[in-house]
Length: 309
Image 1 (cartoon, helix red, strand yellow):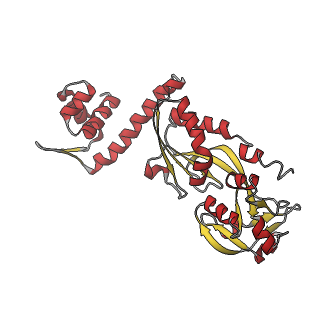
Image 2 (cartoon, one colour):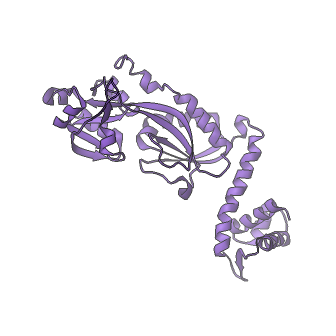
Image 3 (cartoon, rainbow, N blue to C red):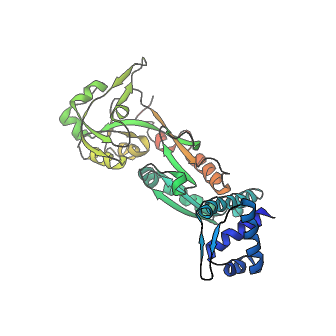
């Protein structure tokens, strides 16, 4: 038995809804399709399909096996494409998840350039600050920023971003300029709800000592750009990545504070589901993004006059 041919016949039956339609898709006879599916069931020693004169339906074992069969055939196609790695040979559907603010401000333009270079790729882009489950939701790749909690995922670093603390000039003129993290206790903070309060307001001085700010939180949000706009309106102090705050700083809407204290440098990562061949289209996109952003991305280069050190 040709296992890949049997898998192809089985998946075609499920996707077309009948043996006859599967035969037409594959360009073979209905009897050959039926024989291949039967051989597959005999090899697995279980029934994959309920067959009646009117309809076909999957058994529970068939439903589970179908999901794996689709993935196996997809990996096989990707492996075949990798042997001829020309731009026009990179094709197929790519489902990508990324954080909302980063996606709108930076990733979308990079993706547009990528899609022009690789016209045979079909993209589904999900911009959302929630924590996507790549495996359960069928994503090929995700972009994540900061500490990676799920160690089962395959990760590659494609860029970085500084963490900055900022406020508007109007806010600082009214409430004062904090000179130490501890003085944040006298101020209003704007909290990004996807990380802990302690992590967001953690600092380190030049001697390496940990310092903790404890501002009073007035606004909480799971979107960093929303908090930056609130800070620009004079509603409090924001601590966020430089890819969000960079434009606000260069236009004068926000002013950096506590610049002499060390803040975390956030890694920007491409993540893939574990236990499968990484498709050529995903590898090519990752390479493209790593080149586009790099170790010193443009949003940090633009801030050199504000942080000369």
